[in-house]
Length: 200
Ligand code: MN3
Image 1: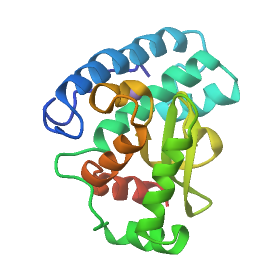
Image 2: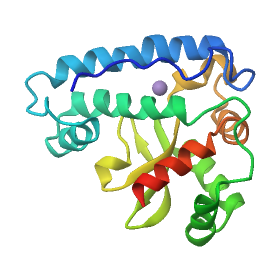
Image 3: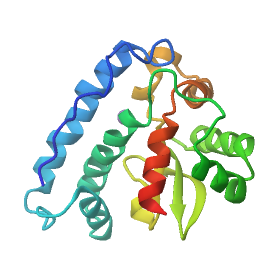
């Protein structure tokens, strides 16, 4: 496959004030585009050209292809990151199947939120905080740089980008404030539930 930059599923200013148009313009138009362009260059000759994006991400990790791990990984992560947010998102009311798994595996909404925010806050340097399904159970994890749970035998269903480019314009160095605002105001729980449906 060839990587392609998707359009944002909303206007640049749709997520303000929690994520500004300026942040989305840089993050989507510059950062994501760079992962797409570099990923396509690194995919050529990697032996993974004919594969799906998920297979490329996992294959790059198995082959220890550092450039492709980060660029294909970041393409996958950002494709979903735009969908994991929506105007008027967040809130404690989760779709039914997701709510049941959060209660059973993660000790309920409040603990899941606290653990997710903590994962993002404690990811040293760049990376991501995740909700993922592994062995039929929900877990909260974090990964460095462009990695994601696919590389660790799990299926991501929600991820928050904690690279500085995701929050520095709007929150400066206040990563905890960004994570809390993101979780409480932007998460598209219907998209999370849809990914859970494919995973479990
Ligand atoms: Mn990013």
